[in-house]
Image (tube, rainbow, N blue to C red; front, side, top):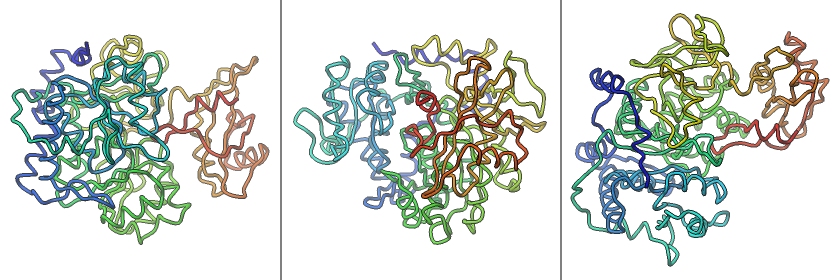
Length: 535
């Protein structure tokens, strides 16, 4: 029997501190939607090229969807898998599941049966919500087949065309008469499940209560200065922590969220233009791809006031591209994780040099520190692993003692795995990932030092440097490059370039591989482990 509350094991001390300080309160997403549906019923909450939904329509749709789920036998605490693209209906399904206390388990669109099976089994999902069959992927058939290996899975709910005979139609559920909910969720209940690094035999399932996601969205609203008049476009998927938090922050503000079901550079550019987006949340890859495609110009970007970059390290080239291409916009870095939500951001009035250099500072109620390999706390200006604690942080991974033991310190700090430098004012600058560091005969090489330089070249579309085993030194460095059309480089070319940049020879790669495309995650991060396997 699924008991997600076992992962919400916050200490009494932390609970009291977070509640007394007002960092935690009794908010839920459905309470916010109800508020805006009453105050601004006809204001848009979700906009796509095909459909616009108002706050009132989403509130009513979510209540009907919840009633439909209850009629099917779902109850409070049940886990419902959730694999949908960014379409307006995603808000009705998400809010409808939460309305009576069921828990959406977010799963990325690129996942197929091999990735989905261990995740569904881990949380004992009773149902799933998915998109109707398309040319590239038949989700309903995939989930129906998974019933054979996922004993808990009973119901497949299909959004879109007519549902297959054994599935349930989303359209039928939102036609259900709403009912009064006798036992809605409390703020201490589990609100959603996200998976990180997790399609292995022991997935890392992050269970957030309403307390943490609401606190993160509420403070994100304040830090980003959103208003009901804003149109906030988040390019990453809603099923990713970045996407869901930006969307919930927009909901808290009473803002509109443009929805892009499939990302392409032209689709993003056209949606910005069509919706007159005032804020864009995306990754560096989105900006660079748009620049290469000639779509990152004033025709599309003139309405943007703020462009928040997250999900991957943001190079100076990306920041300059944004500042030069958005006449009314500012580029800012933003940092968050599935486990921590969205806590680090600079003030909006920070100067450009600081915005290039820093991720930002932690919000009120949060603490950050950098530590060395042995866990010793480092001083300002010293590079180490970022550790973090505060009211947005999850309590523990669900049913994964090994991950919990390796991810938390004895005094309760979360080990993020990010390499940073923190100055005297708690400004955090990202320098890489702990697991990406290459140990060449005892000398630690940070691949980001090389990747940033190469990514600034016009003939290089993407770079990644990874360790390769070496009997003498333990590890050496191999560089992978994706080149612009009709361009190429040799290892000697790379070394000459790095020499011109005064990079010491110890950091130079000792092997070069030119590939057509980087292996990437559902959230557009390079899978360096796959590159190592290719070696």
